[in-house]
Image (tube, rainbow, N blue to C red; front, side, top):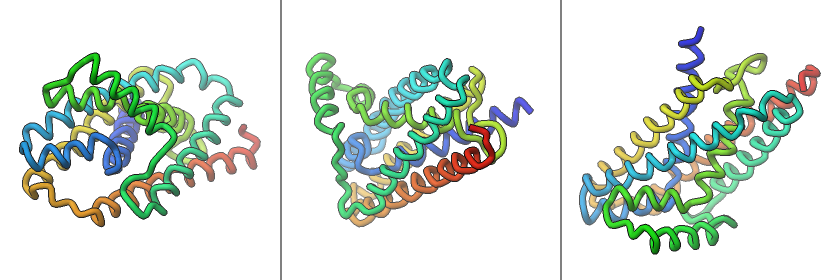
Length: 236
């Protein structure tokens, strides 16, 4: 049974990482597309590896932040509703987008933070470039905070449990899945752009964005159905 919960947590982190990493509007994906075409696979993948390490750090922070909040049923319900609204909004925004750049209110703040980090840290290597780019992206931290709340308050079925239990071993397994999923995506992207010499058309990137938005909508709908089921069953 313990192995089952660990595997579920790992798979949840792996799938979430693939969905969010494959959204092409992110600064890391665009950096890899640009750098990989001119400098090759190795440089592009090191950028992705640095980004993956920082994503794991943000993901770990997000999961440890909710350890003491999920013991209260009302807070758990509020997190479920909040994650449902966030996923439906973000998924819908990506689904109806007509271009690969979907501006958000965090963009300007993230740009200022990233510029400040660049001035202070002066990243010259490919690894540090990816690491600092994700460190300065506030949207990444916000996304993993919401996903941590979602995964720890929603179960693999409508009745019991959660995708990631409020135990260290389950959260560690999920973070490990995030590390594997993020690294795999950046490996695929770096390999593709280096072999294709950067020939990713705007139409292809837009389709990738729509696919990611569709996955977010499905996750949001699942969360909404679960909340409704719990309310009607007097479980909240």
